[in-house]
Length: 245
Image (cartoon, rainbow, N blue to C red; front, top):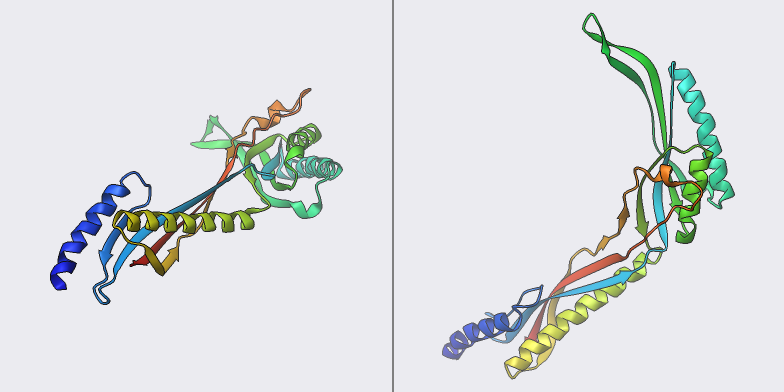
């Protein structure tokens, strides 16, 4: 029996390696050292592609003035106009979060007095993170915010409101992929998969499309800002071991 096992192990491993040389996840077959039962180890991958139905975007107001107090006052007035415009566009207060607020002095390095640059003014920046639940409204919301005084619009990150369900679907597809590979290996060895011995899951990953928009505020004019959403990729992977008979 031991002689048979020593012959079977390399045959199984080589056969599986040849079968799955074109798969992204490796597979191998061997004889369990304790039970003497042949097993197959496979990896499975599941991917779900979906168009996003929501997005988060950073919209900001940047103001400059001779004094820090005036820069903050001007900024508050402009930010209030932007938030009013967002509310008119259907954005609830709960969907708006202050992402960053800062006030910095501005220096003129061309004026050198005693080796020091001169402060010529102050800049106030108020960045808001806006959660847009309806992707169809995104372009119009950017336009309205820009027209109200927003002069800094940063990267848009798209997402799906059904992400939890989609993660489960990707994991199910990964398990099915692993089982299918195990069946192929077993069939090539004139065997059948008997039962699953163990299975482990890796963290599901989400790859959203990102729209880089440093000049987006300048795009808002007579025409509505164009938005291309692309697709979100939700990927799950598993490692599984099956008995063969």
